[in-house]
Length: 555
Image (cartoon, rainbow, N blue to C red):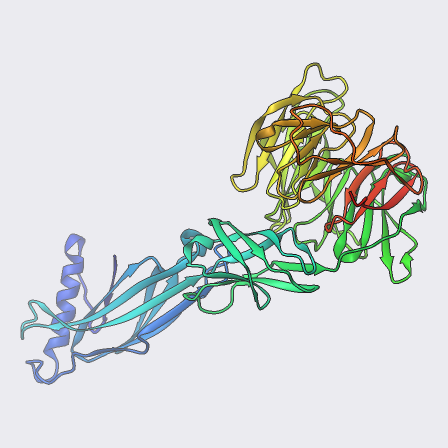
């Protein structure tokens, strides 16, 4: 409880010194107020009134700026010599006043949202006028008290939904991330006007929900909170798309390519984007239009290392050896590069994995087998920060929901196997897994929720990193179906796609392919990269020769 004393200056007090100054001033002011007029104070006004008895503040998010202060006018009768302003509760940071004659302006400043977090906070301001209790004004008596109630709502903010792409007419599980969920009693989740089927409040930053089968369209994610006034700020939109059906086809490169560092399928825009070493570094983008695959476009990006779609799919993230660059996902117009701070001269940015809270983890590497730091990209701030965690030339892979990231370490010169590391988005922690190996050229693969992982192209792991079985050594690239029950491997010996049922536990033994290899329309070339569409209908494989589009085998 904080008391603000407002002294009404109705007389001039001189020659008041030291510790007696305040007492003398109050007494002199009281005598002056009581000595005028008829001398006994009878009939003189002692009332205090306020222009408003309630105030309301609101902030859109816990990291939003504080709302502007608000002012209340206090009027008081001519016998009031002293005002006491008392405020209690968390909503108010400070109160100041300005006196003008027989009125005062009381300015109420709300607390910073970051100091409170989300929620509804209440405060009370009590204003009491005091008048002389006797003719000599040797004491003061309290007049009436006016109370002002203050309500301060700091809203949760819905930042992301992951994955942000869903398949039309198919229910699915998604993760909503934001700030301040736990401070309000959420009664439901909506996708547009459609209620979610089930939801679980995991933490102040995470809600897990099952959305119903939805027709194709865009659905803003909202929370149903009866105690919240107004609509929540939502930056999350679930994009529901019809399943794709692309014919098997080989797409030529518009420029010579020696190495494909990564490829991704942008389902929202029916586009494939490759990060390549063409002409010193370039992004190559293919779009499927009404008449099939259109002529690709090439965007130079010197020494590009890796690419990924941001959590909301609203921009493309690319890393060079020393910076992160955001690109428009349609035009590939580049933003100003964000330089990696404190990057040592012999270190370089290596690979990127996007997590479900609009952030991304970026590994670094060197030409030697040694540990180097990890960087964290924060989309909300468009910032890049170096973390204390360091790994050895690690390659990451995130789940489809962005709930966790797996890191495989090592180089060809590494002696002895290195621990696999797992990052949890929910806890923000890096943990060492009970698996050790040295990575090869085949990128790790994970399913939508993290029930399956394929490391080094051969080892299939289940929950708690139990080794379930193995794929052939001739596997050159592999992806998992979103439910983790099928692995689709590009096998160079077989000359096509082999399908494996990895839902079964083979106790570490070899998996048998489900049927013969499905031939590709052409050879993608060496060191292929591979991905799968979110509806599991199409595979994309890119090596140094060309990009291959291949319908997923129905096995």
